[in-house]
Image 1 (spheres, rainbow, N blue to C red):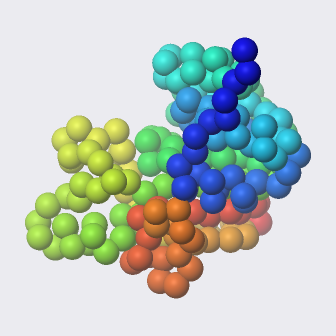
Image 2 (image 1 turned 90 degrees about the vertical axis):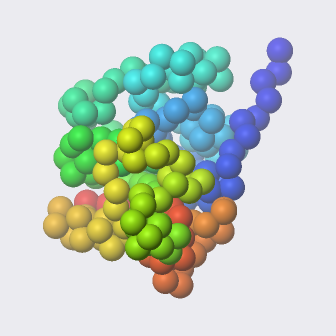
Image 3 (image 1 turned 120 degrees about the vertical axis):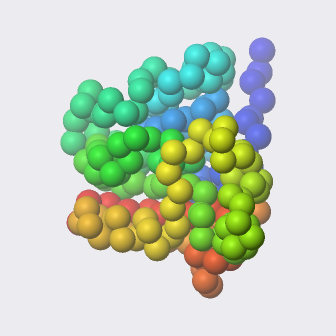
Length: 199
């Protein structure tokens, strides 16, 4: 039976273009494996997904994506330095208790790291806070009391964290409905994207 190509969101398609063709990829918090499957099929990449959720692991296996069940809060000790060309953390960083450690581990394990996360500095989020409420948006769809996000951050927050950890930012921009936002992305984009390497 011929498998159909995965359907990616517009944001995922932009992120996929950041990955060089033929790269060896580690996708941390890979979800159902759709992005990694796309990279394998369309960009000739190889690699592994890392996921903790049983249903997502089954979805990865059904797609034929190599996946390892691992709690990212336990680290990446099983992978050697520069084991991968690219390490992805797409909508993962905000769920981790050890976000700073995992950022350093991403730079250690991969020659290039790519992270994407909800940008709390986006103007609708700021407006919601000014009105005295936590934001609920397409990118931050949960109420404050049931959100799986344990961290919120902005593009400027991440840039400061990268500097603190001696990471060299190769590219940074915002994403809004699948479009790159390079002019005032901290206010105009719902998602932050960074491409970086060890400094």
